[in-house]
Image 1 (cartoon, one colour):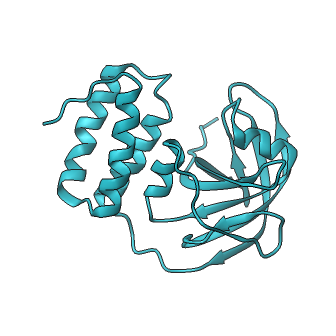
Image 2 (tube, helix red, strand yellow; image 1 turned 180 degrees about the vertical axis):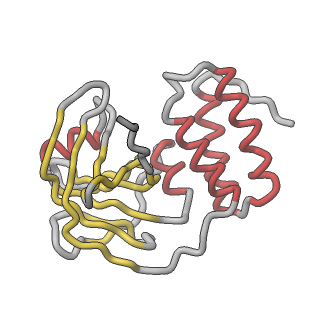
Length: 194
């Protein structure tokens, strides 16, 4: 049997805490048979929130500061109330999907939540990522795995990604990149600066 190729989309998932506070987290999601699959690591705020409140939003944004910010303690991005579920979506989202979770598998190290799309709303057009935006997204993924990857691997990847930052970054990308590099260095990985 051939393995199914998964297309993973890097998005911002917003969940609600028990107190009703919006929690934004960068996450790779997949779409399977018209449903969205979210697989947060355990333990995490996203996992806890989804177990308790079975609704969330999937937000598509081209502002990579939201991805970097969520990993570096900058989570206070403006949100708005959803149209059809009890949740929030990013005010700056290009589009968002409102989900009602229909299935839950509590496996380790990641749980699997499957959700049905209640509504999908487009707010602005997507004009594509430049190379620096892609580099920030990749650096954010590396930053989320600092406990799992060897320092040499992180240094090698950052050296390659920095080429795109140097060539195509605007102010937002430079700010996001700086936040991520600070976090990596605070983790104890001394990055070389060419």
